Amino acid sequence: MFNSAQTDDLAGSLENDMLKRIVSPTHTAIKERGYIKVYRNSIFGNESPVQIDNLEVPVEITLSCGAVVRLEVIPVGSVGKNRYGDGGIRLLADAGKLSFPLQLRRVQAGDRFRPFGMDGMKKLNDYLSDIKLDNLLKTSVPVLCESGKKNSPGNIVCMPGLQISNSFRVTAL
Image 1 (spheres, rainbow, N blue to C red):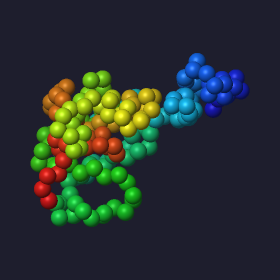
Image 2: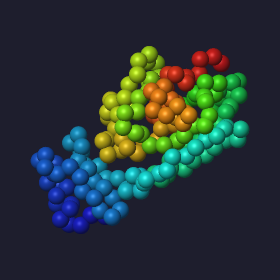
Image 3: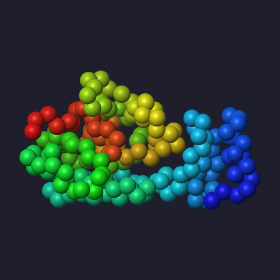
Image 4: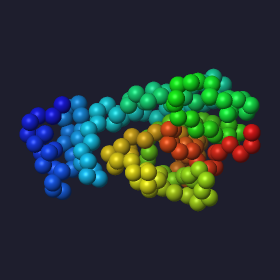
């Protein structure tokens, strides 16, 4: 993982502001907010955007970090029921508000969305800072958006596992 010189640098970094990041072939260590955090480099994989043309059948996408994003249309009557029992995080969007094709991609500079419960727009980067996500991880966050509306501030549906856009929330059950 890290050689002895790198581990000495990591230990010393807690007492000074000089060192911020050490990279090995398999891991990256970063000092942020007074902690040293170690991540596998595989979570920073360069994933290509995935286009989703429809949800006639469930779509399951495994990200390089190992997380699974599952998209499916479920009947309105079963929304409140936990049908899977896997303990995963679920975000519900109103399928009637979606315009296909959708695209699952990484956060891009300038991305904006309307966080659940808010009327105004917010930069994704600011939202991720507000929830204290490490700077190193911000570029790895998946974003589901309507790909037919390039660079439109209202095209982001959600950040799977984190937050849904208020524009796509379920409004009637």
